[in-house]
Image 1 (tube, rainbow, N blue to C red):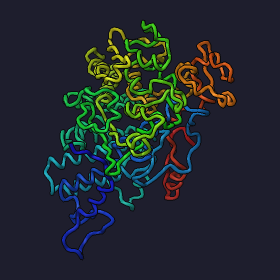
Image 2: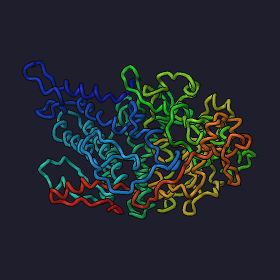
Image 3: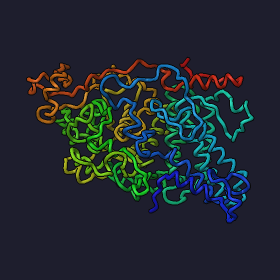
Image 4: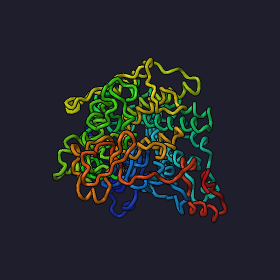
Length: 616
């Protein structure tokens, strides 16, 4: 099976030589491909090469080397699942001097989980569409033209979906704009609804015209549909829970359902892989759950560092807290408060491994680990073999930036949860068909039936009981404004996607950014229950006693600090060292401001760029 490695350098090289002819004295430029005189866009090979240029931007996976943009573990660390020492990462509180770029290589905004104010990729997609219509069309079949136009429009919709998730209203450019069209270049923002209606049209076109198979590891209808279910769920629920436009919310959610069903009804994908293997395999080729993955190969110098930041030694700085751990359902299918399991209230890591959903064991090392601020060390993206090297020299696969495990880009687990949530919100808010047991069996319960790997079974891990419509858990921690079923769908996402790229975006679309205020729950500042003298005696040292930074919290709320003589009393919830809440924030933090420089650039040209609502 051919692996696609997103080798941008190779792609550029191909573009440089693709137009060369045999006349040495009439060669094209050696620093760019020739986009004129019919020397490019001649056939599908040319078109495919141009399309490939989008892959590394949108299908990031574990990115490359030490780059953290859009990566799990290192990139998506701004959410309520993780806690660090001292003050938590703050929300933006002032308008930045600049928040713009015109570069395809522009970095992302970690606090907003999306791109900066940059329309380079919109322009690139529009160039793609323009050249297909005005240059390539006579050179390819009608079927190929429709497919590649669908690819180009999908990427344009992808970029606008991300821009809208960060900024809300943004200027919409539906064609290539020349440098002389100042009224268009410096147009003010278009409304969020107008932009997302254009995205909706692009996505509908993509579903109708993209090939179901364009070769291994190439974008096709099913991959596009999976992403469309993601973006339409985001926008539909954002519109719904923020009270923006009910008609649009319904329209987008219906498309989320439609797109997810394209994947689900194809019967091409299934839950045949254990959870751990999805994120720590050296090859995802043939994995039945993965629609698209990014392959890494040391011989091509295409490697990453995400495995190393899950290897049990490397420090991330923010780690899973007690709130996240408690959200994992008991394997009897109940929340811990209502479970009949006699060990339900045992909050030690070892007990969680045996009594909680298997995804807990697959995501965390099964004993306290001092490399984690909470002692709960995430190792979802490293193999079981990787942590056997703790205290030793790691092999390249799990150390430094030489990791070669494949990265799942999009998988069936996300698609079915997008589908179920969209259907549930349609049922609750728009009179859609109610959720049935069959719906749960196709989604949450199908996920829970994933096979367990032998190592998990040997630890006593058990599959979680199915979610039954007749007995949906009633979590005493549930928000009053969220129905029981939707609460459990949200829980399933939290377990399924821990440390991936969804949590902050989920909070924003649900209008629940207040969860980031850690003053609302003291558990945010705690790890799991630990018997320090037995499980982590290295914490009880003279140095620790001198610093006074080793503390545990008893069930009655009493905090005990290690003083050098009270080791036997150091049993309780681990207290994160000096942890405190982040700065105050408000509704303006759902969206990013634009920079003063961008506003002034408009003003200098005689135009107005409106600031994001809530920012001044």
